[in-house]
Length: 322
Ligand SMILES: [Zn+2]
Image (tube, rainbow, N blue to C red; front, side, top):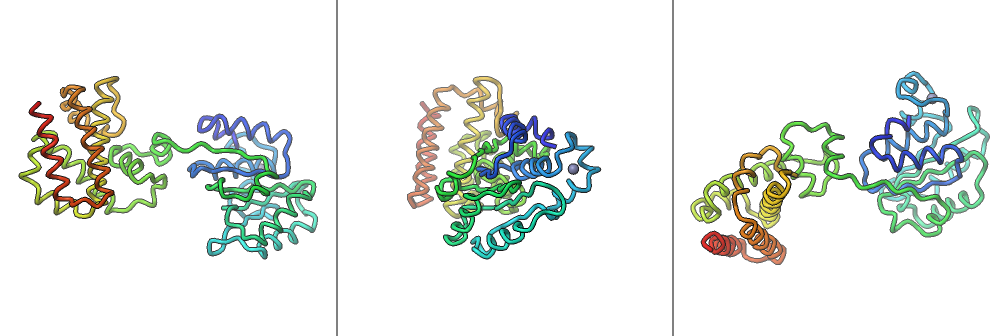
């Protein structure tokens, strides 16, 4: 079943395929918040514990693999933090259940999620377990924070790194075809990589930001004087204004990218607007970007937001009249 991931992450696929030929007793996966990582790893576990299949169709017909994928299999134990901590009892329970020999196969696997959350006594128990490996028992440790996993643990595992997802991975994973721009901006601005974490408020803020950009590009930025009140109705807090600035900055990035190689990275749904703005000279575009980035930095510093917008208009006007 690893083959399903062949195209998604070739490097990891290759590594796991090689490991399969000679399995050692402990692996630490640095997940890097990768959205595919968990499915990838459980496919790997299927291949360790079942060993017989290569293709999705075969797996779908295999009861053993189905049980593994449903996390409901006697020779697979899973430990997750309880109230944000992994306690000694949890490790001890695992050890005692694995001390009896298996009734099913000759290999057994345990998975520990968020392994950086082991408390000290739990970590000591686990270390003993890792130091005196029993034949056929394989540890799969998972973390999104490899830097804070105890060195005594990392040093006893083979470490495998998932790559961080890029924007295209996310778009593909969630099968997003419509409103691409909104999702891309959501992913990039809030650095989210989980679709279900998104909420309507954030979505509206993006939609409004894009609408404002459209308006401003059509009527020049100084037109904000006429719609200032409307602007402050929508973008009230400094966080909200910051989102607006980030959107505008990404918009100009796209205009520049379009001018250079006809590629639109974020504003796919606004090709016309990008095209229209691409008539602007590089020189002016870079100046605009520079001003926007400078102003965005000021938002952090608790500057009066009215003054900030006034400053933005004056600076931008300066460029447009140059
Ligand atoms: Zn199977």
